[in-house]
Image (cartoon, rainbow, N blue to C red; front, side, top):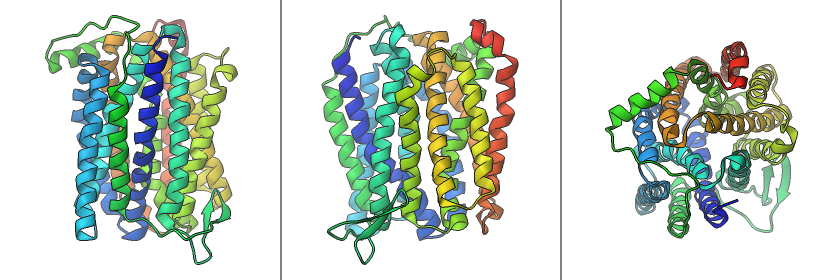
Length: 424
């Protein structure tokens, strides 16, 4: 495999910055739901931020196709680090972080995510040969989820601290430490996040590589380039439909992690932040499991069939969550969601890599992102209604999410032959 050293540096930088990002994105929803008891306020702001990312997604896709992916990583890390560092400094100076600045951190991280992951996969595609696409995508998933697992474990301690006996709960197990840990404040977590951005920048600077394909830089306007993305997909309706429908697991997963999950733990299960953070560890264990065994398990199974299975399994576990009130089952569902989302993402990206040219990939991805964002915005606004924040009613949001995924599996099934034959 070419560019092995460049890939290694990319993975390390991504892991370091992703570690603290993961803790921040766990801490903020829990803060709104459990600490200040304003899940509805967070939901509305989350919907607004999600909707605004439409315009950023349109622009970021053209950036990915037009500029060196290494430079994009550098500038997004620099921007994220400056924002989080400034907010952390304000928090240390004033002793607390205002809600507006908390949401600024959340919005900044979401905007970074929206360009970071498409760039990461496109960069991986640029650094490796076509025959190694699935292997590289699996490595991205394995390393990324390993980072998330560590972040979830650390967050379980930082969000709740230890009790009077220096005990904390991780994965449903009581663990005793030889010392006490106080619950971290948000600005302390944000400072750690800012520092990891700085470390990532230092690593990215040293990435040197030779592209495996010649990337033709297009100097057309953003509007014209976006039209090319739409035109490419319009000529391939089955591929267009596949890209939309196969994304639905990711749609409901983001809503669950950032919005529904803290309400489900706090209101329905009536548990603390350690259970909330531990669910992220179980999720990443599931994602790691599928990342490690995917190539062997599915080497004789095509990507489309695997995605159909994952979508049906996702529906089943979301419905299971609706009609149960068990921490054990909740952890099981988190584990399965890790398998279905990560497995689908690897297979989906691999399939699209083989169907979409590298110099079109960013523009095509932007189209899918826009539709994804519209879906998420609508569902976040729905789940922001006071009904879902009352008692255990959040469980019905899980039921709706499961049915939502099930509905979108049927178009993929109806176009199965075209998608498998490559005539999409």
